[in-house]
Picture 1 (cartoon, rainbow, N blue to C red):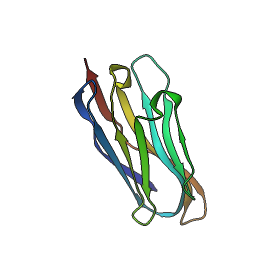
Picture 2: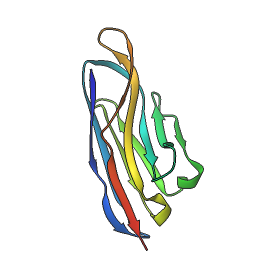
Picture 3: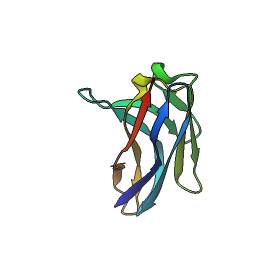
Picture 4: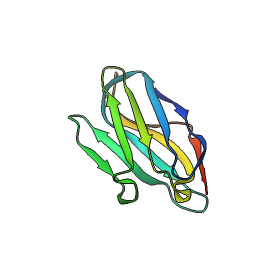
Length: 120
């Protein structure tokens, strides 16, 4: 099993910044992609940002220029620097990792989620 532990999040005023961090542990051999999704009340979970092995990144249009994802492949961690936060960024943010486990089976794991609340 691959476990993801998230940290960060909280309450911040609009225009402020937060950093989310996520660390993967367990029976993992390789992580192919690691990133963040979010789910606001009454809405579907959506991709925020993901970084693939090799460094390619993908961002939701709504966060481009404001959020920055960063992976440390050696430590199996990923962080999300969130700047210029807006009330519409309010959501539960989930870390996600996909790759190959030690038993050579593919895995896709989720963190428990961390709340980000932006007030105006």
